[in-house]
Image 1 (cartoon, rainbow, N blue to C red):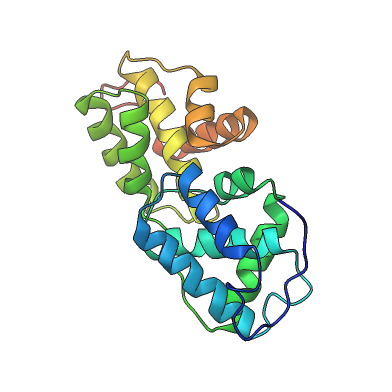
Image 2 (image 1 turned 180 degrees about the vertical axis):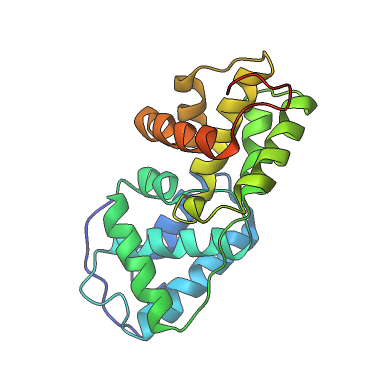
Length: 206
């Protein structure tokens, strides 16, 4: 997509490639029509307020699509949105933060359990593993040490741990690929959670 700079326009979607880019990202991310419409609304509002001025259009579109996904609790990560648009994650993230702050909009985080449902299906996890992850997630969320972790990264690490503990091993590479986190991040997060969660209920070490 041609790199452009966003300006405050009377009708930003009609006079730019933004609508086309939002449609493309929606198709590649398999987003429902309501998400696409919300992304267009967010883009229009932010642009008319001048919040995307000076930022690349691809970053503005990415921020709008990501905001729409979070608005409807759809499990799509900032990294996934950035990747389909060919944008840098950091650039999209900055545009998202500026727009939310400028519009005084509270965009809720996606509940980790929504990511669990998606990843469990893609990794063909048994109900036992899902139940184990839900139980560990409930326990982990009580610790302030996990407050800085992304929802999808937290779920990915718990899936890896639960699969190992219950004899349904999934490789670190498999889990990392499905959850769009790096293997390094998955390893460090898993170690943190194993320390917080302690030994298994049968008394054996994590």
